Amino acid sequence: MAEATGHKTGKLTSWLAVGIMVLGFAVFGVALVLGPIWALFWVGLAITAGGGIYGMSVGIMEDYG
Image 1: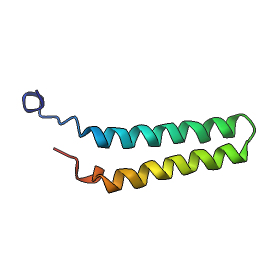
Image 2 (image 1 turned 180 degrees about the vertical axis):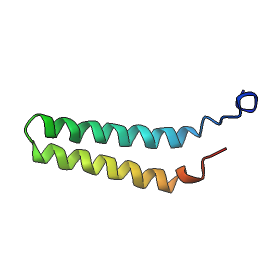
Image 3 (image 1 turned 180 degrees about the horizontal axis):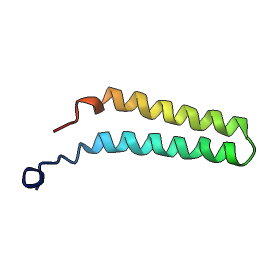
Image 4 (image 1 turned 90 degrees about the horizontal axis):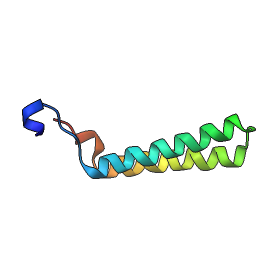
């Protein structure tokens, strides 16, 4: 199906990395809105950074058409 539309959906590992980064962004965003709750902010930032590191380790930047 990807050939028919010209689009590639990406690898599952790339989407997992994106999901981790979105989760971390949501955590530190909520921490800022609710307080700010600095401990939760740093936890969310660490999750986001961890997702970025994971994404780079699985080759998320090479996952293109």
